[in-house]
Amino acid sequence: MKRVVMSSAGCGFRHEAAFYRDAAGYRAAVLPFVREGLDRAEAVLVAVPGPAAKLIREGLDGQPAAAQRVAYADMTELGRNPGRVIGAIWDFADRYPGQPVRFVSELAWPGRSAAEIGEVAAHEAMANLAFATGPVTLLCPYDSGLLAASVITGAGLSHPFLRTASGVTASAEYGGGPAVPGAAVQGAALPAPPAGARQLPYTSDLRAVRAFVAAEAGHAGLGDDRAADLVLAVGEVAANTIRHAGAQGTLLAWTTGTEIICQASDRGQIRDPLAGRRRPPETGGLGLWVVNQVCDLVELRSGPGGTVIRMHMLLDRGPETGGRP
Image (cartoon, rainbow, N blue to C red; front, side, top):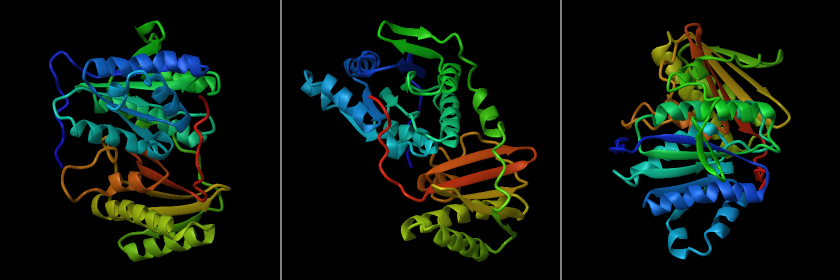
């Protein structure tokens, strides 16, 4: 796959957050960002929940020619698993080689689980590494009225710039540069699995792994197609254990009221903090990238003590509204 070279004279990565409390505040921050990109002949992709996309479309009604140059994606689908978003930005940039790109990314919306919000925060930090040298301008809106104060504080730490109706300023809370993502991948421990989680040690028999996951998915009531996706994802992770981590791993599975979760752990260490967030250039070795594509959420923690990958599949994937606007 062709990969765009993220470099351009005088044009580097800028990562902004915008905090809003209502539709007027949303328009005041986001529309100037979109118009600025159009005025500069940049490629613009808006990935936000549906109601927010409507606000942006309406704000561009008086500029039909410009409005036709804006691409849209439903972030409640694309960003259901935040691990997909960096790859989506790369894919969009690949369509415009040598041209700066601008991306509106609203990943944190009210109602997301604590695990999802944690992966949103990890994504925001990793974006600073993924696009550090590239002509990418990224704006991330946050609803400061409905989201928890800790989420807003975290956004200030991971975004070098803040955008308001008055313009763009440096974030006084910004926590650092590209070194931050590595800590995010190796950092905060995941909550312990429940005592009743089913367990399967594995060494080399992927058939046993797949049969175990298929049975657990069936007992949980996961639909056939999504059960097949979960079997594929866990199989890819287990295969990586066998190839790279001494061929000894442990698989756990449990259900909550809303999802089935499979966790694979081994003694290996993943050193690339962006592993699985970008499509590898070769046709093989797609394991973690595939896992992120098919699962509703992926939590990866890796360090000297080993690697844990937790894969979530919702039992009922109903539509998400994404809160305000």
